[in-house]
Image (tube, rainbow, N blue to C red; front, top):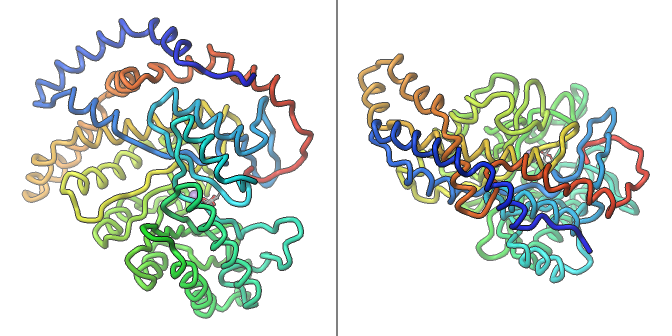
Length: 430
Ligand code: LRH
Ligand code: MN
């Protein structure tokens, strides 16, 4: 029998915290009422917020130096879904799962789809992988994939993406994300203009095969694994490509894929204005593509990004439908605790962004009163909306305190028994 974190365990843990929560919630409600804000409206928004989790995020991640697997690691896509379900049970915000192919390639797509549906889960964006070579793969991606100088390698990479689309249709997904590591390590290694032309030609074939109603997301990244030039290195080239491809192509923003101090919330505002924002791979970072937990390093930046998103949401901009996904690597924490905590941090930034006095803000902007404009944002960012987030989880059947509930459940220890560790030395993000 596979151990499950059942509703009774969550309810039992919630009973310990409900009294204090109701106090805090009532107090915050009175405070917000004085600001003309209805706490119940915000709680509804918190209950409606959705973010998808990456299947590759429930296993312990690593770096190029090492990976230190934790106990009870998921060994296959079904066990990954079991753990994703736990994140959903605790937060009630994460029913969507983003799969990575071939890491999650099922023998029976129908079996995997019903396994997910039985747990209230669905499949969000598919992800292809032409940044590593698979066993018995005819041609190597060492020198690139969709932009490779050899048309046969490009063909192989396109074929893999078409396979992902086909599988995604069987799984009920509605979008496909393409990130490639193509680029060079030395000046002169790659002809910058020709590489982009080859990439666009390849991507055009993938775009041309998009199933009915699907969207194609392309993900830019400044560097790594290439350390001198990257073919799709920033939002500018991504935006150029999605415009060239057509109306169903969009630019996905992975927060860790930018140089330090880049103003990501401005890139988000631009892509919203241009109608080409695909959505996000949320995470956080101090230096490079560190894939740390969302909101753990730069919570104010996360808030400012949601400030742009909520501004567009409230304006009901046509076609504004961003896909929210986490993309993290949990090297030293329990992946379930990190994913649950990160989902909570996203709901926090979203609810705080809905607390912004937008009429007041635009008045301060029109009157060029920078201090009052900043203060208007800070008033929202410095409001502890914790009681709203916990009440939203509680009302949706989730955990008032997800991490405490997970730890009390003993789920990880049970999985350590059920899933004997596989001796696997190695490094890398998964
Ligand atoms: C690349 C990336 C991409 C995924 C991979 C797991 O850094 O962000 O989104 O395919 O991580
Ligand atoms: Mn990513």
